[in-house]
Image 1: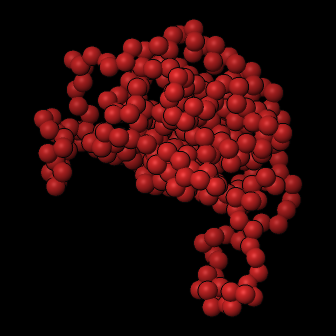
Image 2: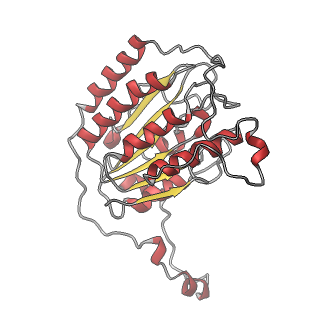
Image 3: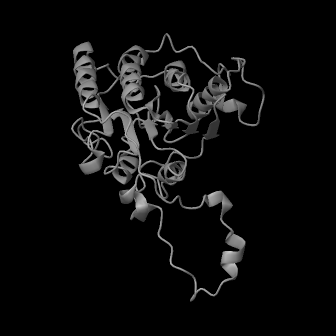
Amino acid sequence: MYDVAINWSGGLHHARKDEASGFCYINDIVLAIVELLKYHARVLYIDIDIHHGDGVQEAFYLTDRVMTVSFHKYGGDFFPGTGDLDEIGVRGGKHYSVNVPLRDGIDDRSYQSIFKPVIQGVMDYYRPSAVVLQCGADSLRFDRLGCFNLTFKGHAECVRFVKSFNLPTLVLGGGGYTVRNVARCWTYETSVLLDTEISNELPFNDYIQYYAPDFQLHPDYSGIPFRYENLNTKQYLENLKIKILENLRLLQWAPSVQIQDIPPDIMNLDLGNEDKLDPDKRKPSKSSFESIDTL
């Protein structure tokens, strides 16, 4: 049995070491991955938010200890403007950043046609021992800021597929700007992660009026036309897949890590005694962010 941890309030993937960005002040994802690297030689980060996971990619752009894989809308002036196919990492991290730039209107079938082969290729070539999955819900249909056509079940299929590899996994939230649909999505994905069937009828609660008129976990949207045409042609997605898998074949297969001293686990630090020390006599500590380039 493998471990799954869930933090739907996390997933703030735009924040950088020196600045806030895109509603994100502290990049909890980077901090969590730095902790995981104390126990795992290779960590895989997967991002299905509609926006590119630029802050996480930037933090680990120089290392092969973390592979970042982001599926996102790219083109025009769409925020944050990064995440093109040719952003693959540099120096020791070359080919360990994987970007899947998508166009408006992608639906469940098209999304899975690129998501599953890319993630399968990453698992085959990189062989991570832990996964961090950011499940931004702004890639859903009807999101106020998004332009994709994913359903709750299509979005959750990504979670189900990642879960099928039976690796220790940290699942995070992220974007999402139609609140009732964010709640539906993450509720359903929690049930997927727990292998638990839940009713389609929403229980009575203080916010039930937000889910009118159907009051269902999976509303019937079959009669409502898509807001965005799917511009992701079969040929475009096939070309993306081929190029990404070619890059993966250039990897050093399952890179190892040199033996080195492991910093203390943040959960085991005796912060109580630290606070009692004279601040002028405390030993300076190197921040986790400053140590990333040496990983």
